[in-house]
Image (cartoon, rainbow, N blue to C red; front, side):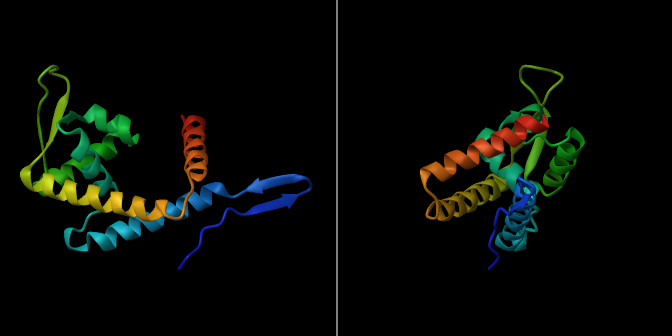
Amino acid sequence: MMRFRIIRKRMNEHVTTHLIPALERATHVVALWIERAFAELRLTQAEAHVLAALGELAPCSINDLHHCFGHKRSTLTSLLDRLEERGWVRRGTHPTSRRLVLIELTEEGRLVADRTQAAVRELEARLMTHLESDDLAACARVLSALEEELR
């Protein structure tokens, strides 16, 4: 089992923290877990996360999804194309704006989204058994700071 460490090196009074590589490794491990958990569906990490979000948000606009994930619009469009080809989402006209596209889950897509959400919630619950509330607050601050820095 791989253990994640935040490596700190002291170099002439300057401390370097290798936080980004640890985040990248964690992201990769989650992607591999999704691949294994949904092998028969051949879901990618991005598809699984979009389906889980649609499980909570749908029907919603592509703009709503874009704001949730921060994907490039072309990447999100490509993801939605793949999900639509598989019969899990459908695009339609937005009821309040002709410029927006409405994304809805199909019946089969709802089943996959529900399954994806349940698996992610279960993984988070398992993770929570190893963490204190202070850990979560610190992690949330780090992730928020990273997002702010990169905007």
